Length: 315
Image (cartoon, rainbow, N blue to C red; front, side, top):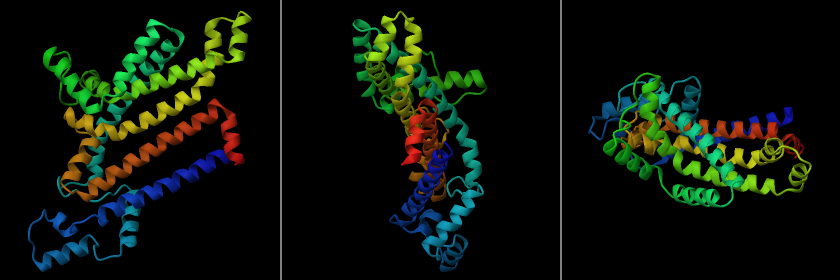
């Protein structure tokens, strides 16, 4: 287990380093003049240009600029936002809670509803199974922004059950405001998790040791928990972890649709305004979150099946 954790930690650090290089280089190797971005496209005197060049170290080699940015980011200093005229770290602290709450809410929906109806579909062949397959097929094909528009039109405009915009204030009010965004964000992923759960549970139910346990008179609930769900947990955990990690990026579309001030909407706005510091910071945070979630999934593999860790450590 120790070697497994060390290998995963080394892979995590290597991935984050490569991602940080790609994020920084992509922004500064893109077409355009950084001075023009800093000045909003306005004409400036040579003296002002020289001052901006010196202030932002634009005359330093790219590796030097990258290292300065990385070491500053490591200490929580992501620079200064050109558009909002405030510290990027402050901006992130203000916007991150909304995204975290939205992704957490959507993750709960995916895990509870997706796995629940997947198990139900696997154990109830016939009408229930056919209905679940049909519904999940349709839901899996619906993009998040289409789901958002549909939910706003029906449940906000026509029925008036939920608010269409904003995050709300206080826990209960936030739950109400984030319900439609969370559902819109979770719909397609929920369908995928349900279908994978159905297939995994059905495959495990057909295995010889499960049929033997049932023939010996063991209660169905015990067989389901100890033999079916436990062995089906790895593929279910895989797809659930990957879909939850992808929500971090998909949240930007939903946040824009519901006018939520989260990191996703901030990233889109910053990209439109060519606000380099904000784009780099938010992109790096999203990559870190994505990699960390996948690392947690890898760790769960070792808990669910020790053979995974032993096999990896021996490789």
